[in-house]
Length: 422
Image (tube, rainbow, N blue to C red; front, side, top):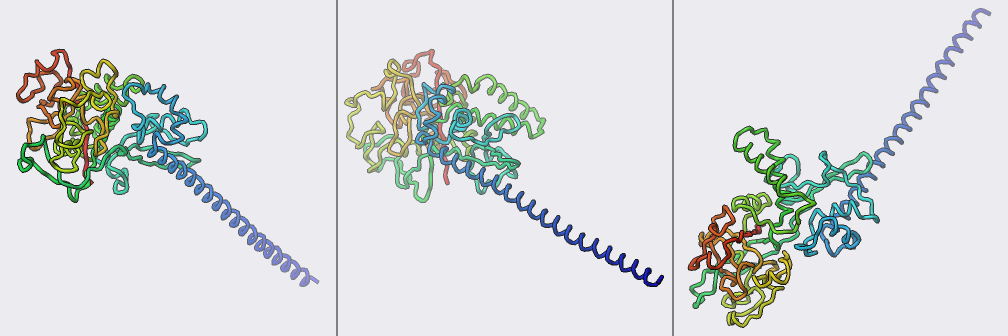
């Protein structure tokens, strides 16, 4: 009897252990299955967040590229123009690849919800450049030379993108060109070619908004350098003064040409944007009609070499001369384009150039400072600027007395544009 009871206890113990093992087995598989399901849900949710961000980024890139032709811009245009006071110097085609459109979509687009994620300082975007920003932050091989960095957030996921700021460029045709004014004999002209070269020229003059973004980016970069040299500290102080004194986004006209940079600053700006200050030969390539090398005259919109300048009627919608000041304000991006697709190539404001052929001719003279029929209004008429200041004494014109041509009270407005080669 005792033996039976002893066996009964052993059997009960074995059954109990077996039951524990069985329950443990099923519990483990239940937890494992639940864990797999939870992980699958998390992966699915994460992928959904990424898909949402990529969808918004693709949509934004389309709006960014289409600009004024986008239905999204048309919805926010009225409020956007009012917010940024886009009146005097604004031509609507300049909204392409411009971050103002990002601000207006964020503030006024009621149809779409944009999941923008602000940067640490509360900014919606940051201008970045290969030459300014550390290369280890971005895979620059896959990105443009410069652009606007933005962030999108969906749930716990954040992704960054760089939108190219190089929409407004014109490709110069590969062919033979002539530099300067037409000589009586074609063989006396200086010829050059652009074969096997992909040269892109800014369609518009560089504006104040672009310079503001550039200077601000340089300032942030210098502050992160931990370089305590006197030159670096002076550069920081200078940029601080410029940004605080000259650029308040609610006060200045973002599309007004930048006209108060010294020539070295212009060159630095262009280099940081992946290019160089436009040269005089390339300026001529973008200015004249070149059906034939000899078919050149003094006006970008006229063909042929037999044009009589004295018979060309004044037209303030093609060339903004001194007489035009009485009728309307100068509007950048309105006059043109030239045969190469470049605007404001003649008239308006003076324009600084790099001139490797004639160093004393680094300034386009055609501008609002001269009368319509003045010889200075002709294409390829150039003067010399000292590159440092904007008084009359900074300008020299070959064979002319500047003081007799311009008012002594004139403060010269000198703009610039860049070019780059792919």
